Length: 406
Ligand code: MG
Image (cartoon, rainbow, N blue to C red; front, side):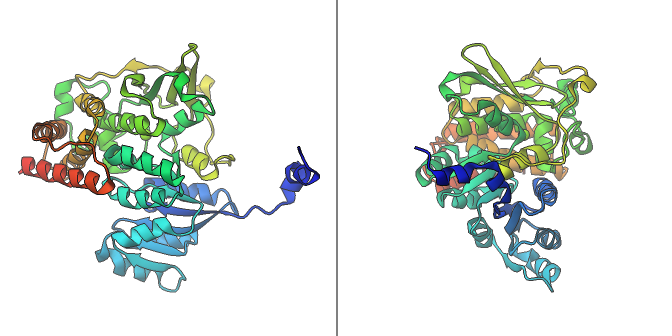
């Protein structure tokens, strides 16, 4: 029965006058591309958020600027060698500085209502897992956490009562499209790929692509690692793996479609033949605003797509012959166990080697394949049962890839 007190509680006039305390945020990966977009969304919503902690990798001066800009209480830098820069940048402020991997975990565990996990690569796994284990609400932009240790992370989240909000644009679109519908009524879950800069290139030309060509993404402005993964379509493969763990959908009901305009980000086909598309302009501020304010909505500073102005949206199948990295990722997803962990680790090492000019673009996928196959052959890809086991596979795969490099 509804009491008089409930009526007061739900009256719009009362809600309008009620002071809603700002939502407290911990932002891991504050100096990267997602961190920058988070800062823009926060600035566009005065009074809605307060930042308790920020964490960054190597750039102490940039982290100090971001901490001051966001009014953070605590700033943690992963690389101890960057502590002096962080400290110098924070002088005269009240922000507490710390360095090292433990400090990053401390930033993740500060009293926050929402933890933004946007550290690039497997470096984000431990602090994200710490937040999940503590039962926090985590907005997940770091896909490697699930690719590396998806089963462990999802089981732990369920046990600890942690809630994961997908911040990756495709998964955010899928999350919005599912709504409260029963996952068993999904027949196919599709994520879109822009196709990247090499969408129309031949296999031979792709194999010889330069660093500058691979970094020239047509639609999205992102960090270098994700941009290279987008050019090879490995990014889509990692995102399929991420979708599998996040939504519990089996590999055979997951699909990728190439959509060069990047307006539709995710599609859900239901068993009755309905198809629901999640659309937004290709700007990370939209999924970020959705996660930061969830379940409310706030202005993100981004306008939704003007379909009449766009005129047409096109879709095509992904070509696994020209983009073998996607096929390799799908194979790893089907194999399961530690295969996705090894795939991700080998890819991190290979992409870094490509960015350093040590190998060609076509060598990335060859190295990844060689590492995964050789570890499979020596039975090193058993399903990880803990984050420590996942990280052991991760390090072994990275080591093996580095050996193949030299
Ligand atoms: Mg994405």
